[in-house]
Image (cartoon, rainbow, N blue to C red):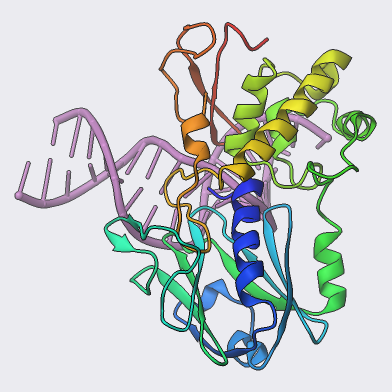
Length: 286
DNA sequence: CGGGGCTCCTGTGCGC
DNA sequence: TGCGCACAGGAGCCCC
């Protein structure tokens, strides 16, 4: 599922392709996934920027509005050039037997640009969305996100400060709380906790200074590593050019429940925490 | 506040 | 072979 590194990967690709382009027509095959009157509102809008806040994709429009999108679990945004090819040099890949670099049965929204080029929004489960908002709505949405972990703002002091806001929350759930830290989901929460040897059920206020320091470093390290490798392709993630991510080979605990810990060879535990699968090593995460 | 559960949705993989 | 079901889970929502 797309988290900060995967969304950043998509944003990086899109930024190179669609800035300056003007939307022409929207084909909305799944009306629930878009905001009211979407097709009419997107028409003739010019893209002036592509960025990210947490796991949300922000496409800035030249007229002051914003096209926002969330990939949720299985969303994909694919850019096709005027020849209908997914540029970026990626090899075409398939998932559930379908080529993601062309429209298929999971293509929920197609946005055509003037003078060629298309943006495809694929989503098997239809949890993802696209919406157009004005400046005021945008400010309100963005203000609900917590600190960006890959910015200078995410200092050790800042981390301690936000941990103190929710002292009783289990550290894994804390890490996934978008209003506290933006962009971490199930994969990077589990991986960061393993990397820093911290048990996912520890209450935030019980972390020692050294552990907080280590966890912060692990979060930054894992997110940066994943961005460098183009994200993690668990299930259906692909970049905007349809490529799979390379971080999947670096996963140490995620989806490895019941398998040996790569550090101490104990069998990794798997539990449910807040409805989410959580894998950790009960021997080396304390 | 924390915790639990439900909801949206659909493909996959299991047991029988 | 095919049916039924648990599971995957981001995030909003509800209730206790």
